[in-house]
Image 1 (spheres, one colour):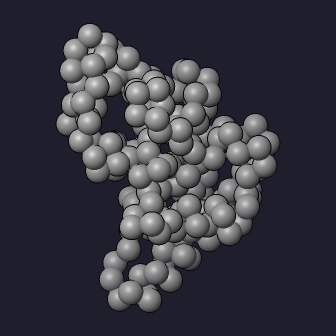
Image 2 (cartoon, rainbow, N blue to C red):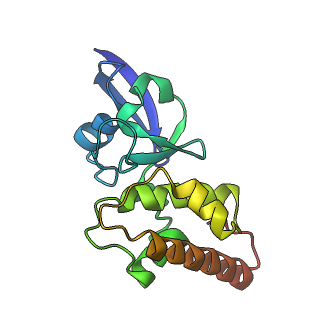
Length: 166
């Protein structure tokens, strides 16, 4: 066991763990963050997706020692000043999920996509989202929801007169 310093959702935390422990276990078990989910444990389904320094990663296969000192954002960290991120709001507005199990990964992958590319084409959306598996096969509904998130982010930018990254 050793002390590992993390920055999760803007908050500095120190955990005493085996440094090879998957980040997912630390987030869920030690920090009580339940946005990221355990799906396959192999980094193939996307349910455990978090954002590290702007990049969507699979936390189930990421040793916690490799993200020490980096900004880690979970689903819970997308809320700012009590206001949902446009991606989260789009998911509520469009109700694209059925069982909801994959939605953490879908939302976090979308957030990373729209941060890097605020106006993706349908093909770019499909490409970015291909590593996120949905047991209910709501892929077209999710694609529509992502289009709605783009619209919400653009509306927020226009209304505030400031740049808003979705």
